[in-house]
Length: 306
Length: 306
Image 1: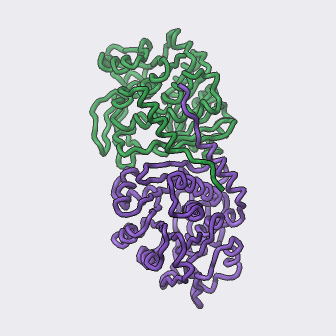
Image 2: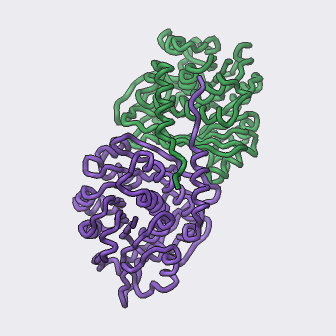
Image 3: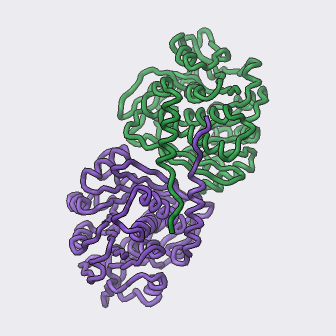
């Protein structure tokens, strides 16, 4: 199985109460690709500038991510994001965004990327997401977005959402999109827009899944050491879709979807243990399986003895 | 087994986006007692005014709650709380608090209340909690508190915490108490203060349990209809301690504690479905067991097939 992701490929400058980095590899397509690479073959699509060099490609390629469709724009600069976090690591404070090569990005997918089994439309302009979607015949398509696009390009975003199978947003974004304060009702409203699978990302509190079969909720993995939450949502999406793709996207049974939610939670938990891609880029599948089992133990309880 | 609770017995005036009540039965001891009454014999301790009449006693007594130690102060008025909630039901906005008979409360427990197997010290002044604690020889004592006491009577609260087995607060209160932003580290800091069992209440996101054996997390039960969150934390505590007391507080194995967390979650979920005590006062044990099983289904996932 193959999984294509389109999204930002970035340099991030991030400060948290636990340290800082001036310039580290980041972006939704990067975090997603690395997380998904532990499950399936991933093809990353997106533009970079000529400041994006062999060291950055090496991080992706060491995990087997296919980088042929990463378009290097000569004379351009890579997308740049600067942000800081206070003690509430659920809230990123953006200090600076430079779109750079992303301002002129026109997605052109190779045949290999077009024909992938699954597609993840990372958080970029909804119009770009639609153009990529139109080029692909993937059997499972998931989309992420953010408050900016809900506020500024709601109609285009709604059209993009109608064309995908799975929508992944955080709680507050679901409420903003649907104007429905109750999350379960917001999820139902999204299903009426098109997607059959709705995933609410809840930061340190975990995630919730809604389908026609019902709902499922999983808490975040409780960690004593959290250094940088940047990319956690994309790592969640990478673990979730990477596992689904490996299991065959057309066999997404309720049980498979639940396991995918758990793998997403596991990858997000590793993501936040260190800055940027530093932890997820050097995982082993065994570490992932061990934490999956630990997460299972820390969330399961017995039938009642009455 | 018998469970004594001391806490507020109140009239509440509450407005939410889904309705309002001018004067309804409330207070931590009331919500706790009703929830715990489905599991064990509960003895409620606290003062009321002579505006607290047969109708209010009847709500408690219809659930078998022992009300002998509810002290009726002639000429006094019952504790009164007025608040409203916006669409974020996690945040109560207090508009008015009248301590009334609570301002002069001096706990005097009957022998039956003193010798109960378990004791819940609801959210009242830490000095009062300590005086009640000193009168009881319960084998399991749990304490709830709030930001007000952390800010204004930190030393007395710390002394009260040191004398109990279990501390139940919300996430933000644990962080405020310990000055540790990471919840898992905050829980460890609390265990160093005395309690062996630490329960973090996380509103709609559920709850987390920390003991020397490790941690456990449970999401909230996802509901499409939430009308009033008032009392949810105390209903959680009532389900949790009521179940533990019924199972024998000295046999609080990790498995028993997890089931107690699930029962707490179930009782809290019923609490928020209607105003004040309206839903929890008219439950059946069968409804509780059905939702327990539903909660188990919506949180469990398989071993991975790799």
